[in-house]
Image (cartoon, rainbow, N blue to C red; front, side, top):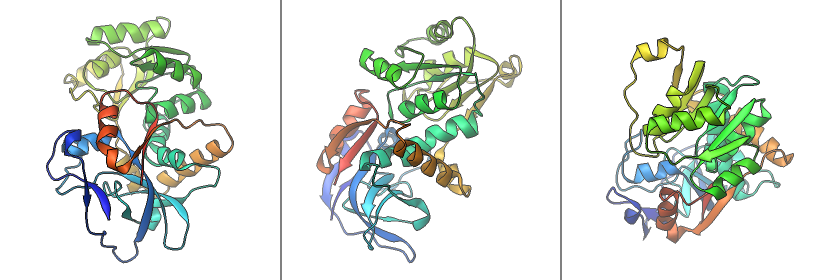
Length: 319
């Protein structure tokens, strides 16, 4: 079968289309004929081996696919960390969901990782309460574009979006953000000031951060008493400053980490989010942004585009 394989860690240039053996299917697992595979920012970390979970070579990236089961069902599957950028892959039944006819492949791919992340960032990690202010960084991206809509739907008082271009900020406003600001700052002080001004001079209740660096530091400084910053990535590849416990105690602030892998270990967490998101899409209450479709052979270009911050929503490889 054809697959994108990584034989040495690095940037987009290490993604190569190769002919490889079909995967071995363990007892109880499913062999899926892949129709499309999702591209996530985490895949770029995996390709360079800078992700939370260490990767091993040779590697076929890709954490989610839409495929056809041996009995002909169209399902979306969350994989065990890799294997999606291929014509065939292995999935476990408890990590697959039948895709409603009203939901496209791209929308389904956006649900199982980015949608579930947005759902549990707000509900499980931030414990969003009605009327609270919410900052969504990278608000035109896969997680961010969903989080903006869910925050408004679940009663946020003011949703502040950040994005790097006027077009992305306009999209965030279309999705329901109350205000959208430029994410490109050089210092934590600039980010703190921009966020506080966007919240009409008030400190913030909830911040969803996947950038790290000065963006994280500025957000933490802008938190109100009992505010929470949920960190779920480090797209800027620059770690934030070290935080001393006293700095949190002094303003009753909280830092919460989130990694979706842990949702797979708790029965029902994935099903709740996936089924809830499918229901919202089917009812027309959630707009999934499918920002780009690439042939499997052009996975390198997809990684270049997502790393270059030139994309919106969910990116899809067609197989």
